Image 1 (cartoon, protein in one colour):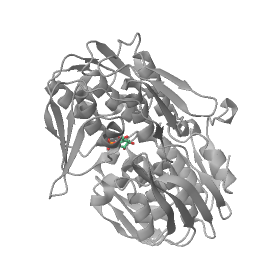
Image 2: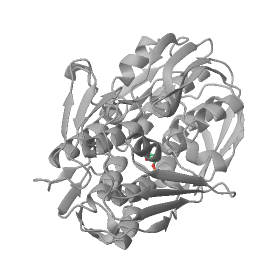
Image 3: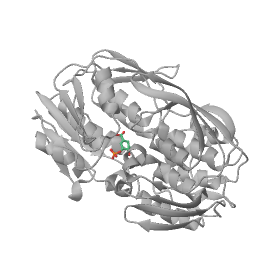
Length: 445
Ligand code: S3P
């Protein structure tokens, strides 16, 4: 995207006509981070097609460069990553700047834990509030030293050394923690094992295998998974095709679903079964969503999605589904505000420690837009009445890209326009959000 297209300052959306069009969304954020990290370690040159060029992913690219990987964007938009080999990272000259990205922070902390140097990490005000104990604990058990502010928060330093493999059962269902431990296990002798009582997104395992690592995944009878990685094996460069991010597609799908008469097709959306909860849930609420041409690319399921507008109904969202749609609750809250009846969304404690406290920030903004709701410690109960919300508020985004985009979707159907105080945060995960939405008929300025 050209610099002059970048959004800064307040952004408003107002009631928009039916949305229509046939579009792609930017690449998957989770897979983009991983392609740069594993490509940056592998022997040879990895070509990445469809990389998300959002600020979060660019932080990972820069950090990998600081540790010796060669990462170059080609004129055709593909990226070439030449790795240093497992165990070949070099000591970064400066601080590793993680910006807003919890994923970059937690995955790279794991990666450097086995490297024989100090890595200093910092980020923005949002990242400095987020809990890092969840990764510091397993890394310390493996032998690394984490020196941080009180509460194990950023900024912090990881002192890496030769590690011991561990068997670690995740106390919180988190793909970031799982990935952190597996990446620490890459240059550790023996077998590193992560046990997850509830399966989380499996892009790290899938991509490690794609790069030739020996990873085994055992499905337990109780639904849990045991993931084991043989350490100190070289990775081989492999082409990665990154599908469209389902978390970004969710904003378009919700906007199309709540605006009557809309008909939008989103091509090449990642449909990993551990990520697709939002589409099931919108379907349960009565949204007209059709998934077309499902196929497998680079070990991941992808498909095209056609969404038509109509009236949604309130439902009780199964808490067990939360892991497969954890990033999509802010926009689901918006869908619930347009639905007929009550939508109950509980079991969401983790939302309080995302880029912002997404339960509190969404509750405050929704109330300011005239939405009736009850805030619980672990979620929201939203009472829709089948009419568009009033809108007419300016909402604080609190350095949270998904808060910004969710309220812009809300304003696309509300009686009065909705303003978010800082549109620049959308660059984190969805560069070009405004232009893409406007190309479908939205009125965002
Ligand atoms: C991510 C995992 C999730 C998600 C985040 C991306 C990843 O975080 O919210 O946006 O790429 O592994 P948790 O692991 O904290 O649940």
